[in-house]
Image (spheres, rainbow, N blue to C red):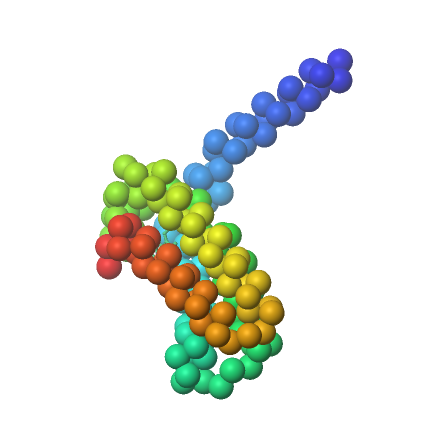
Length: 151
Ligand code: HEC
């Protein structure tokens, strides 16, 4: 009796997970707006860290830690919104993200892992390691943009 209940519940989970990429958004335009908004925020907060590591702004440990934490949170959000069919036309997403779904996912996961490390390093409050990890994250953004971003 209990076992059937568990199987039933898992079946519902699975169907839910498979439908998630499209079902989350009422319209394809919403997916585009969602991911571009998140990417814009990531760019803003990552840019504030850039200003510090490049010496244009003075180093305020708490502000850098906060920005890194925000980027780490935002970086968990946009990837499903890149998988909605048809949303490569007229946007910065290249169709290769659909034909090479696994590669795109791997680029997202790699970047996410490096961003999480940046948040940890930033919380520790030493500028040199922050600068080093900032560079690693920047490369991970670029790796995905080079392959899957068209403009
Ligand atoms: C897994 C792929 C991937 C990763 C990782 C990634 N991006 Fe992007 N990014 C994209 C794609 C694709 C677009 C274009 C989206 C569109 O136009 O719909 C984009 C767009 C952007 C934009 C423009 C947003 C706008 O205003 O429309 C900024 C800024 C940006 N990314 C910054 C970053 C930064 C900073 C990182 C790393 C911390 C990063 N991205 C990591 C794929 C990625």
